[in-house]
Length: 447
Image 1 (cartoon, rainbow, N blue to C red):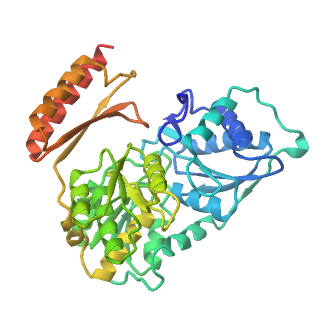
Image 2 (cartoon, rainbow, N blue to C red; image 1 turned 90 degrees about the horizontal axis):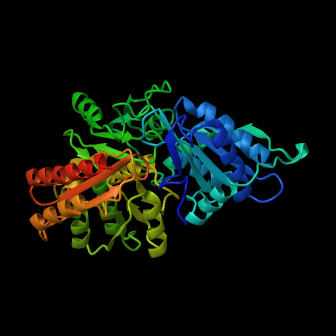
Image 3 (cartoon, rainbow, N blue to C red; image 1 turned 120 degrees about the vertical axis):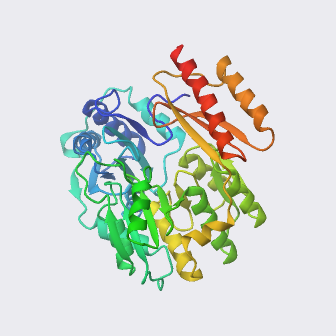
């Protein structure tokens, strides 16, 4: 069955649109409560990022869950992976995050976790959607859910993050710039690295409800690069609005993306004999990552784009490490979902044990030139069967031959078609990607 509401990462949309209104979220909370938990007074943990709309949606979600007889635990602003961890450790029946991740402040979304801190499978999301069609029946007054606030959530999660590297690891002597994107990690990430001994320079730690992801964080690492260079820092760490993405900057100001982070972690675990199986990337993962892993005899598989699909393939293969170029890094030997802070700690651990800079650690992988063009789409476009698009793709593939690849896919979180072209020559790749993007744009205008 095709989903009506859920995308690749929960439910997301512009605040005030069909799926981001108090009315919809109220019914969603009720439906989720009916599907995710059984009878009695089970509890659901609710966290959010720093968007101003989070207050409104939190109240609506809380009311819907209470109407279904579900007790609620509120933690306030908390990274998405922090909710996954706390849901499990507090033995909640489910966890819910109010966040639109890397999107602008005027978007918001609802993400769900099971009781063990993993994202919901498709069949559960479909069951919630089906329940949305049922009349909303409120439980008896004596059975309504109650709400309580968890006051030590921040400290619990900070200690968990620190526990994901060996206990004697210290970061003394390292100067780190941490960009929290004015999002959910603003009161957590800096403390993690400071408590481990690093000198931390903070940016993106003054959320006002409107500035989340605004020219900062993992989606805009240029400002981080500038601060690293001006302060002669050893490394820069950029997280996105809900803390599940990581982009880094080395001491030369060069951006280190998710593919390079995966390579560094995989190489370290392989050399230490901790590499269990292979590595999962996505269709967007740079060919250079695949080739570098092949040289170390580490198997590599590509999943569909989206960290949930990376997770599904990891579990199917019984592997522990996977991620996306965008910075979602999943270390299943450390946590149950993608976690930007935890991934950063794994790389800092490699730096401290090898004595090498981030710049040197990434050298073993040579990235192929890759260009990504996002084409705005106001309507659904069948990119597979549109003649002008098919011809443009065929022409580019013929030009690249066996030394490159083309990928087109609609975004699961934004009204965009993503056009990716990879090849040996950067200039050619940019021209070819724009060639296809122009064809997609032209097809969209004709709808």
